[in-house]
Length: 406
Image 1 (tube, rainbow, N blue to C red):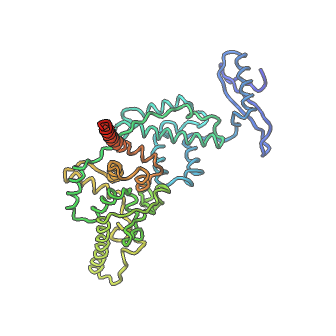
Image 2: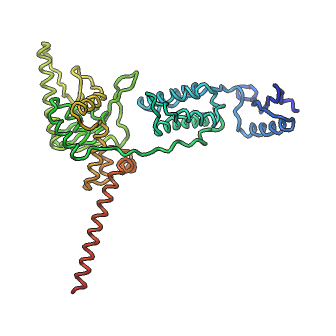
Image 3: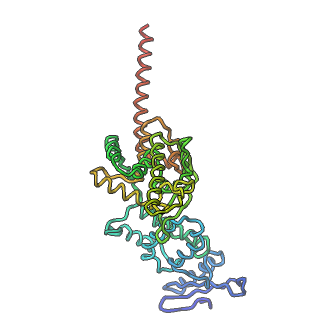
């Protein structure tokens, strides 16, 4: 056998291939341990390994071989923290909890397709989720996406030669149609809401339903964003809660999310009433506390929905309110996101606003995303268009018959 092959045990052999020197003067060495039954098989495997080394298909020995957990921290420090938003970083942290449990202890260059598939099987277990419930296909797919991202960077940064995730297919995701409130249910909802004593609660709902604002955009509003003379509102920022960091201000979700919208007259009136109420409330608190100096709580840079001390309100308070509101009044479950979704659905079903205008109004990244999100409404509109076309055909038939009669 060549001197670069050493027997390490029964049927176990260590291969060593030298290929010049590194920039620091150290020798570039490649190693591999194999299991073979015959000397001929050993020599054949060594020839193949040496060829791979010389073609750059093997990483030299001496490079730090990280576990997947160590590489995740390395990737986060060198890429994610500079390029991802705080909410994305937090979400990835939550996803990696399961990945760390299943694969985190393994050397990243030793992880096999089989080990990854076994991990995915664990994610598909009926008790893999919180409360011993199954994970959705969407959540499983997001774990797979994060793994693909990690291995893509591992290849790019020469930590591994091959990406085992290229052979992994994510589970098929079923599209669940969101169940919006029909006109009768929404009418009842708004009727009960009109009796709510807190104007800010009513405004949250109407901003989500009539303007399609995201919860984080509603709580990110400042008074300078509202032009009462022109009845327009500018969506320029959002506020989000991040565990460990609290409430943070950030840019809108995408470039298209930064938008200016016309405000329906009723909503404009409610916003003016809320502005007056905020000023009156501050004056009452100052008088009670014997505070002489008056700081305008509706100055341009002040939050529209602020705490008494002027700080921004927690965006989750919208969810808390609407959940309790529905429970206390025996209404069908709703949420801030559902109200926004209903706005898009209602406008599409009306047939008076086209898809591009609705996509722009909602601040979606593309028309295709809007179409995929509101496919049920598009199908409804398509049926209406078929009925209209049938009417046109019937009219044409009548015209033809009248012509023949003459």
